[in-house]
Image (cartoon, rainbow, N blue to C red):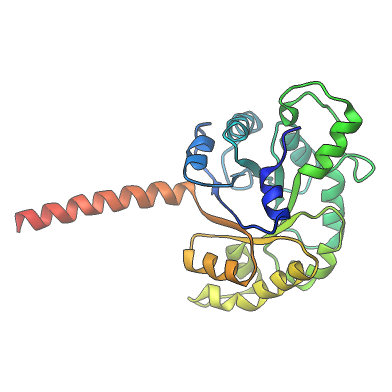
Length: 262
């Protein structure tokens, strides 16, 4: 089974950098993000327009590009978790986690016995379609695949220590927008208003030696939380990259035209 390069980085205490793909459906996006220097990419099945066939293509090329493909599944259900792992995702992120019971169910769905209850089919995308001893494969998959909890609810923050105590949790990622909505934050300075809850999650993760991260388009805040101890750093998304890159070029052309004609 292919080693999980992202898990290796995190186990070594290093930082990992990546982004979220939410709309593009070309398999080459994995190659492009690898060339951009990403260690990982999330493919977003919660808010993106993806079906399993599309995710299979996106994940396969990303694996071949040498970076770690992760999938944000829509919900903590067996058929949503196990199938993306079968097709080759090397980790899943589950949104809207709130309780220990939910996390226990997630771990059961994502891991093979004796850790969980996932059904085993070896020669699929998760094993490059190669034959392998099922027991050996199951042990490797349980060791390599990454279970990431997205912390974006008030209850999750309040129960974070209990949530993290479930064996099998690989990392957490803060979802600032949903967390702000859940906490009733109405300040224009949303990120400052979230500092306390985010710090509580980070402290709990550091206490239990579980990598934590955040998904946000604000580079200064990514840098600040990295400085404080976060290591799974997810910057912006494909939609923002396209819009910003196009806008910068078009703006430059329009401004230059105005300068030359004035």
